[in-house]
Length: 238
Ligand SMILES: Nc1nc2c(ncn2[C@@H]2O[C@H](COP(=O)(O)OP(=O)(O)O)[C@@H](O)[C@H]2O)c(=O)[nH]1
Ligand SMILES: [Mg+2]
Image (cartoon, rainbow, N blue to C red; front, side):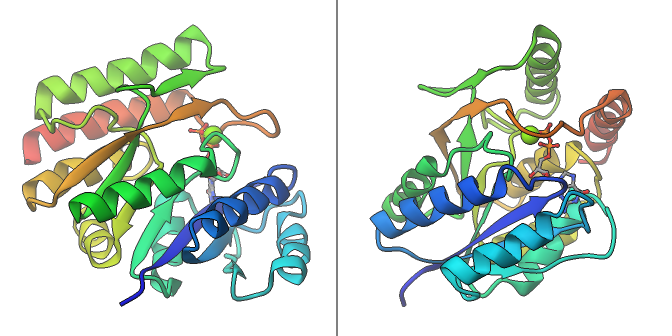
């Protein structure tokens, strides 16, 4: 069977980033002759992201660029589920739409998955040539601390637990999503911890993460507290 990759792009106010990310994805997927679709899950962004998505559908076709909107801002976790349920590929790639995740890493993830025949390939900022660019000390510290704490408490043996640039076998993602309870940023971490429990094979590909240029981040103080709470909860339930 020929593999098909469904790339989920959750968007909230990404009108400036969308044309470039879609173009880059197409370039890189075509360069390795992969079969794919891009699923834009937009939560009724007030900046006109959906109009932009419809313009892009005219350029690339509705089979390549699919728009699966929701009525209001319902959060990232459920956006992935919404996209996954509508995906026609046997592999699912999740990534941010703000150009922090460069599509040039997708062919590397695909290659690694094929070499090892693994269930999950996760991008890592904290191994090999991976890195973080453009973050201030505060964000770097929070991310490092979150990864370090989780490593100490749960020892999942994956170097980047809070990243969200990953490739999953579709049935693996379905199984993980239905067994994960966390909301917010802790969700990415729980996915990996649960994947370990289920004995799924996980490979890593180093990525460089570039902070967004256009638009604004949604990480605030409450998210950090939520993460800490989620980590403690996972520690006691797993
Ligand atoms: N559909 C949807 N997308 C979201 C929501 N919140 C964030 N996003 C998207 O998720 C990705 C990551 O969000 P971002 O704000 O960049 O988070 P950060 O990189 O951790 O600061 C981006 O593509 C956002 O547009 C949401 O509530 N709904
Ligand atoms: Mg971002």
